[in-house]
Length: 90
Image (cartoon, rainbow, N blue to C red):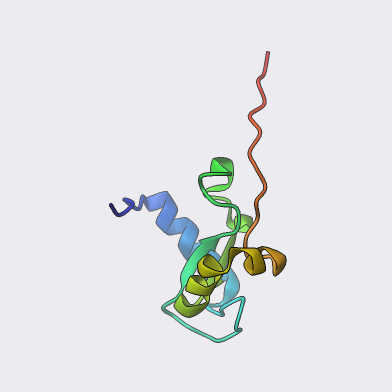
């Protein structure tokens, strides 16, 4: 099932792309048709879902490589395994 993209998510993706000037952060090629990738996944860091500093712009080929090679992608800084720790306020 495809994720419904909210206006805030679309704005986040656009900001990540603009910050990168449409240049893939892995192969350094210019592409208008890439994707904004979360370094720390939305599942492990929901608090960073719309944080532009948690996003990098990748061409489709490099985005697929990142997901197909998570260990290498983590070493290269394209994936973060940082976990979210909920802090309870009293």
